[in-house]
Length: 344
Ligand code: COA
Image (cartoon, rainbow, N blue to C red; front, side, top):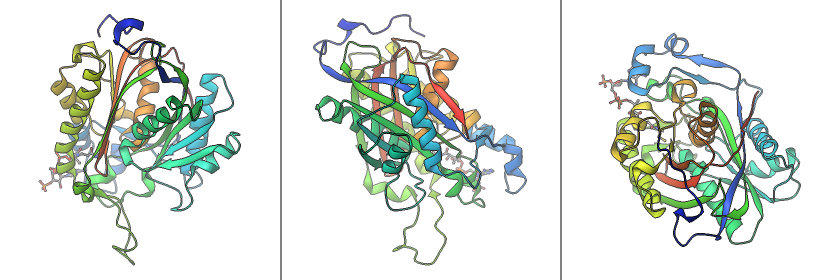
């Protein structure tokens, strides 16, 4: 890991500009862990195949009584606790597994965690949802519209993957993560410095759940063209990460901590190689938690702090890719934040 970290003067022209700053980090995981052997009992797969092709060893799964909103409330409340506050001016909930199609879950999550009648809406960008939501929250904050925004990402993929489809059933897990963002300046640790967002709707069918109009009577499971997604994921993640890195005036060797969407260990390794990252810079918890879609980056952030990869001041790049297709990256310096986690 590089020994130098971002200081006030490292980003020319940005000093004292308003920025959204990470003030707290929270997570929530279901207690039930499903390992590869357990999946292999009902599916034509094996621990060896799953480990070799994906790096996944286990994933968490919610019990029937737990909703996506329950996970979101716990992670959001934990982020407030981590920041030492009990209010926020708005809430954005990133999810691709809503408990019900209407209404959005964000207002109920905001109400249940005691935020009152704040601005609250959902962000639907699948596995890029956290990055899209954080970028949107940063826009609300730096424009002066809101002083703080709680961004929550929560997913229950165990409810949408077809248990009989070995190409997807082994890949995903349930969980939630959240960050509290507040208004600050670019020279503070925790400041979000550069953003990149993109989409390619021509490839929308590569990751989808058929809608009522497309499949009026049939089952509506999550479907993915794994190999095509795999190839795009490496190109999109690396390209997007490189754009925010350059925008900050950093080179790949300046990235102290790289926190990518946790889709597959082979994708994370390939993107790291493509970027020319310093060995040990990439944070990965895909072995333990599998792909938790939009929740994967905040869950990886918490694990990165615990493993010592994310230290205060570390030049950090987050990068995500998912259905839509969508992708996005954020460059920031890491704050002196202690994550608060819980299980449900
Ligand atoms: N167990 C055993 N065999 C499996 C399997 C499983 N769980 N899943 C697929 N296979 C088989 C396929 O049926 C295929 O068999 P065939 O050659 O006889 O047809 C073979 O393994 C290879 O399939 P392929 O899809 O080419 O494998 P792959 O190396 O691309 O790995 C993924 C499959 C899904 C792990 C990989 O494509 C991937 O990670 N894709 C991206 C997923 C992702 O990132 N999604 C989220 C984006 S946000």
